[in-house]
Amino acid sequence: MRLLATLAVILALVIGMGAWFNHSLQTSSDDLTGQIEMLSSTIRQQDWETAVEHSENLEKLWEQKAKWWPVFLDHQEMDNIEFSLARVKEYVTSQDDALSLGQLSELKLMIEHIPRKEAVNLENIF
Image 1 (cartoon, rainbow, N blue to C red):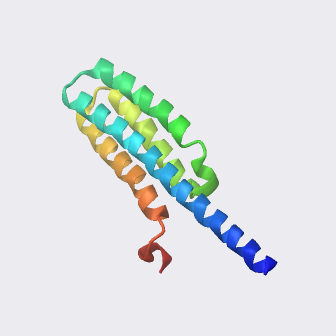
Image 2 (image 1 turned 45 degrees about the vertical axis):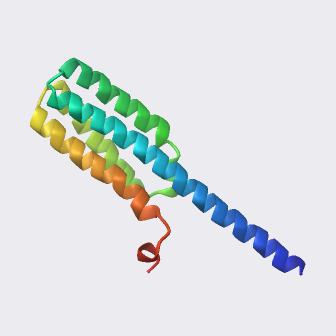
């Protein structure tokens, strides 16, 4: 009976930690995509000084929110996002709206993909 109770507690902890991880990952992803959308609208308005500030804020937010992601996620995806962030920063600095918006769109898709990929559902199990 003790073994069954111990297994039940361990299972509850694993499920609880998984739910917490998924929630935290989704919250971080939503914050990052919100910042990306704000930066995109600033670029569309051709307000480059504010766009530079928003790109720096995006980079800081990435460092804050995603510092624990490598523990649970594929490092290749993390590297791709960091490369994309570097390109966005340079495109914004050079005031290239087409390349900036294109790279921001790609960055947004990469960040939105992570919580969907890590979610527990039948598609990811099978």
